[in-house]
Length: 500
Image (cartoon, rainbow, N blue to C red; front, side, top):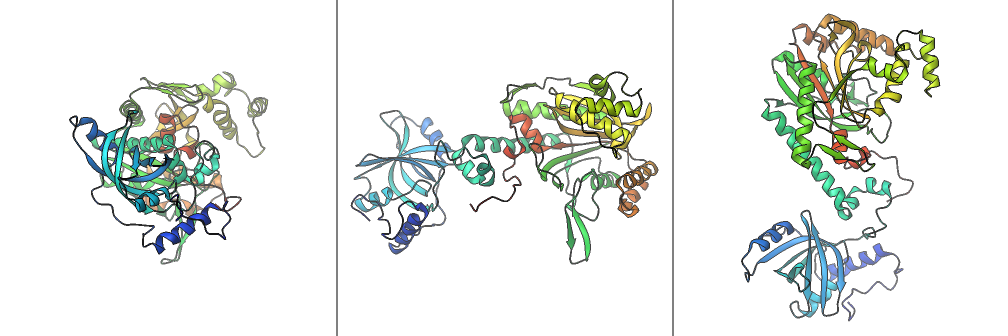
C-alpha cells in the first residue's frame, strides 16, 4: 500500500486497464490474508429499517447497526471519508473518521473501489448538514468489484446495454428497481384478488406433445427418454379446460408461454400470462372480472385510475368501459358499406388505406388486416371489442343470434390487446369441425388435431367463461413503460456485436 492508503498498481499494468488494476488489488488482499469474497453477515439491518428505527427513537438514544450493501460513491476529505452505501431498501451515508478506525483500517477503506460490497458497523447519527449517516466503527469487504460501474450520467444511456446487462441497470437506476418492485406487487395482488374470489391456482405442462390454445409457431424440442418430438407451450388453454371437465369450477394459472416469433416493442418470445376459467360463466362474466381486476390493481398499487404515460397520453380506467363490435369498428374506419361491397372492392380500399394486400390473402384476412393495422392502434381508452368472425377464434362459442361470429372480447387499451376472453366452446362436434378446418387452412396434417382434448370434451365440459391477460403488457399499461423489454428482467436479445 502507498502512504496515501491506496493499493499500489502493478508496475507492469497499463493504468487505463481498470480491471487489471482491480485484479491486482484482489491478489494483494489475498496476500494480506483478507478474503476478497466473504460469507454470511450476522445481525444485519436494512438501511430502510435503520432509518425507521432512528426516526422513532427518543432524542439522545444511541442506536448501533450492522449494514451491508454496495459502495456507490466516496468523497475523501483527508482525515475523514464520506461514502454512500446502497442496499435493496435504499441508500445511507457512511462517515469514516481517522481515529475512530485505526491507521491500517483507514488505509484499507481508502483502497475500496466504487462497486465493492461491504458491511459496516457503527452508530447512526445526523450530520451538521442534516443528513442521517452511520459513524463507522468497523467494516469488512464482502465482494470485490473487478469491473467498474457505468458512469452516473452516461453509462446507462445505451438502452441495449440496460437490457443485456440488467444487473447494471438495477444497480444504477432507481426507476428500474421501482418498476420491477411494482411488477412483483402487481403479480402478488393479482393472485390475492383471484384467490379471494374463490379461484384456485393450478399448474399445467409447459412441455407438450402438440401446440394448442393459440395460433402461433412453437419452439420445438425432442424428448430423448420417450424418443418423441415435443413443443414448448404457446398457451395453457387446452389443459385448463380439461380441468373444467374434471370438475374444478374456478381456476387460474400464472404461466410462462413461448412463441417462436419476432421481437418488437410489444412482443418477446417468452412471456407471462394469467389464464382464468370459470364454469357456468360466459364472456360477460370475464368482462366484469377483468374490469374489476385491473381497476383494483391500479387503485391499490398506484392510488389512481388515471394513468399518465410518458408520451402525454392519459388512460382513464373509470368504469364502465366501452363495448363495440368488431364489424362496427371496421365500418367506422373503412365505410359503412364495407361488408356490402365486393371482395375486390375491399382489397382496393385496403390498398388505398396503405395496407399491403397479397394475392394469397383471403377476404377475411383483408378485413382482419384492416382491424390490426388501422383500427386496433386507435383504441386508446379501455375498449372491449366483441363479436369476432368465428374463423378467427376456433375455441370460442358461437353467438346465439349469429353463428358467423363468436361470443368473445378483446380488451384493447393504449392501442394494444391486453386480454382476450371467451364464452368457451364446449360442443365437441363443433370443436372437431373447427380444429379440422383450422388444420386445412394452415396446411397441417390431420394428426395435429388434439384428439386427447376432444376426448375430454366428449365427457362433458360445463359452459364457461375464460380469458387470458398478458402480464407483461398489463405492467406496461399500469407503469407507463413504452417497451415490453422495460418490464421483463432479462428480455430476449440478438447476439451482441462484441463480447461484454
